Length: 86
Image (cartoon, rainbow, N blue to C red; front, side):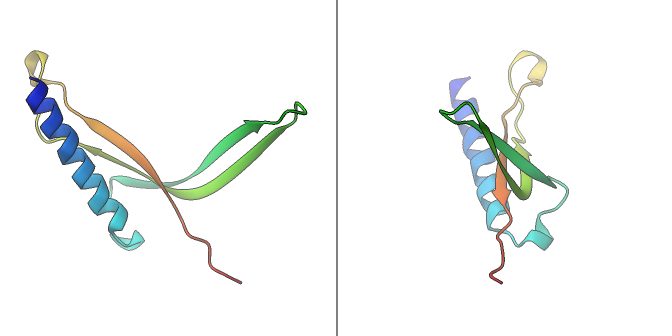
């Protein structure tokens, strides 16, 4: 079973790499545009937020395994949208 999981991880990794390299117009239904917000707690107790616009892309393996062949591997990455120089 370990071999199938490893192959599924590699498959998902390859799918994500191809999606990341695609132009924004070709991202497809697996991508959704959104904002990622990260909160930082400063030593002073103040909270600082950083928000970045981009795409969340989710891919999953084609091969299912485990009980009743219902399990698989999936992963989500965030790809920021570049800012243009003004």
